[in-house]
Length: 301
Image (cartoon, rainbow, N blue to C red; front, top):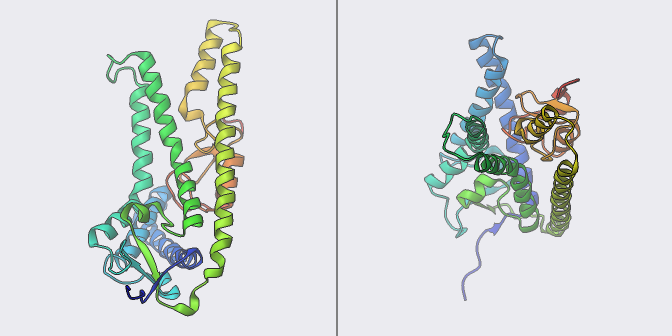
C-alpha cells in the first residue's frame, strides 16, 4: 500500500485566510509605493502613480517571495506551501512566473486588447473590405468576450468554494496547489459550509445569466417591433443600442445611473456597488477600489 502523505492539501478556509493576509501586505506596499511615486512624479499625475504602484506592489511582493522559493507572509502565517499537481514538489519557476504575470498583467492586458479590437472594428477605414454585417457581428462578439471576464472570474470563485482549489485564475492556469504544514490550523469541518455557499452561488449565477439573456432578447424584440418615426431618430436609436461604450460590462445592458471608478471605468451605479460588496477592486482592471471612491456621474449618457 502507498504510504500516506506527510502533508494534506489545504482547503478553502486556510487558502482564504492566507490570501487575505497577503492582500493586506500588498495594500500596505501599494500605499507606500504610491507615496514614493507621487513624490518623484509630482501630484499632477495621481492616476499614473496609482497604476504604477498597483502593478509594482503585486509584482514586487510575489517576486521577492514566491519566485525566490519562499512562502509569502500569508502562507507562512497559515502554514501553506505551494506545490504542483503531485502535491510532492514545488511548482517550477516557469509555473510560478506565469502565475505572477497573469495575476499582475492578465486582466489589464485582456481589457486593453478587447478595447483596441472594439475600436478597430468601429473604424470603417480599418479593413474596408469587411462587410457591415460581418463587422457588426464581430463587434457584438468582442463585446460578449469583454463582458465574459466578470462572469469567468465569478465562476472560478464558485468552483473554488465547491472544490477547494485554485482561488485565483492565475493559479488555475499554472496548476498551483497548496498543502497545509500546520495540522492544528486545519479546519476541515468548514469545507461543507463552503460547498453549500458555492452551490448556492452557482445557482444564483445561472439565474443571473438567464435573466440577462432573457432581458436582452426581450429588449431586442421590442426594438424590432417599434415603428421608426424618422430616419434620424432610427439612426440615433440604433447607434445608442449598438455602441458598446454605453453598456455596463457587469450587466451587459445600457448603463443606468452611470458611475465611475477611480481608474476611469464606467458601470451602472447599482452594479458596481453590488460588485464592491464582495471585492474591493475594479471588475475590469482589478485596481483597488473602495466603495466611497465611486463617483456617480449626474446627467451623463
